[in-house]
Length: 403
Image (cartoon, rainbow, N blue to C red):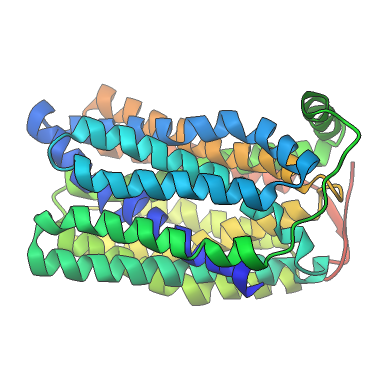
């Protein structure tokens, strides 16, 4: 379990530094120098969307292949190496070329998204279902701690050396990611291969089986919609703050607050899931996101950004951890990577649709506030769909889903 959680500790450095805090405002600033504001915000929106598109396309066939061959850990290691390598190469591309920087981010994000399919698929083999909520939450808490530690080190380096230190921060992130991929590959048990059906046939069967379970299908649709909003907040917050004139120092400090608050808050949501049910915990988190988005529409001062960052830390990890553990209960035994590929495809679509819509709204109306307003639809729509998912049974053991 610790080895599994340590992968979140390692790869969350990429999420904190490259998806959220440092690369978005830096790349946006470099693009604005050439294209003029707010073009840089839109550029980052399209980059973030494309960064996860390949993962969306690769996850289903590779998930089925991993199940059939027993290659979950091997696939995780391969795509983690791809992501970490792309991250290190950002140091060679920036600040000379924001276009090359965007291309390398797309490579790194593809590795990040695809590796997570196989990481998530290892969760059901770690313990009994009654512990999945707390283990999933512990993984996210490790992620907040590891990502926050690297972000703090990067922020200290940037404050000491200025923007010329930013490329070295990307090197630190890539190395950190590789080092903490080793425990999960070495120590977490690999479920045996599931033979008897070819890869394409397994994919067709997965799609058919998912459609045959209306509650499972409804949950996936709800997750796709509300995780669109979560993914957009993660990827666009710093670029939006930069457009409004929030300094890099304030943004780094506020996003460190997100990491710090996220550790106890995510663990608390794990306990809430065990006591009240994962569905109820997710709905509470989504209600919090609605309030956060409304406040973001009037953001104008640095302290506003700090307040919003702390609030995101309260709900972000809980929503994601409980979504993962709730879904884990719905997955047929022996088909974890295959079904988690659909789960992760749903989640990674947030990396495509949400930032793209944010970029379109920003371009059309000439302000990032228009993009923020569009995000409200994702949280409200996802909450309403989730409300219709009927889950019955003992929330402390096996969950029965009404189909």
